[in-house]
Image (cartoon, rainbow, N blue to C red; front, side, top):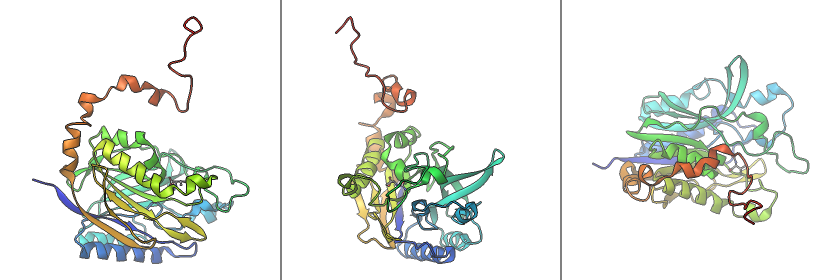
Length: 319
Ligand code: CDV
């Protein structure tokens, strides 16, 4: 029996620096109401979905910075979203800035949670691949200070049961790293949810920036196909406080094909009915990992962080 589910990527248009949490949560609730009307049972919201993309700013004052973070969710501001989702019987993925006391100190992570249709948090993921810088870069119109405001995630890439299948999560820049998908592929993941904020002015090279949409689709389609999993990518789009953000939220099949995509840069719900069994034929043929993978040949992936000596370099006696 096919395991069909109707799911959605809930894209957000710009969130102003001055926009209140209550206003943002009302926008999320409106998208949730549309999801309900369209028969969706699971919705993916973007990375840092409750605020503007604050790593573009330099904050020297910790109290000023802290207003962008949440403690445990649902706090009072996000509670209406949790209530509306439980009442509608819809599960969701939500990205937010997390500030917790752990190991006797305050820690900050770029986090996503998955909440089931009964309102229980069933998965937590903390972004591993933090882009940008720890120090402000002179001459940039917009900073990208994720390395200043977050620590790399410390939870790995857990796969968990949800939607009657196996789910995993990524956050934004993680989608560019095949290792992240593969670690979940090795847990037989069937649906990867990810939210993103991709400023179109990020790179210092125009020839890279102009390909942002291509690279977004390329990395999600490759991750989906090579691990035979569905991927739902939900973006923040439009011009946010002057910085233009890539939209193009989409839902990608285990074949690597895009089955639904946003057409605006605003709040928009992208829906599709997906079959969680669709990855099975790929997992039994090309990507039967147990039959075809050769981990011994991949040792460098975990032994080295950056490029090192060539394995094929000839010794002096061979040359
Ligand atoms: N928020 C992100 O992780 N953004 C990164 C880049 C553009 C900085 C991304 O991969 O989209």
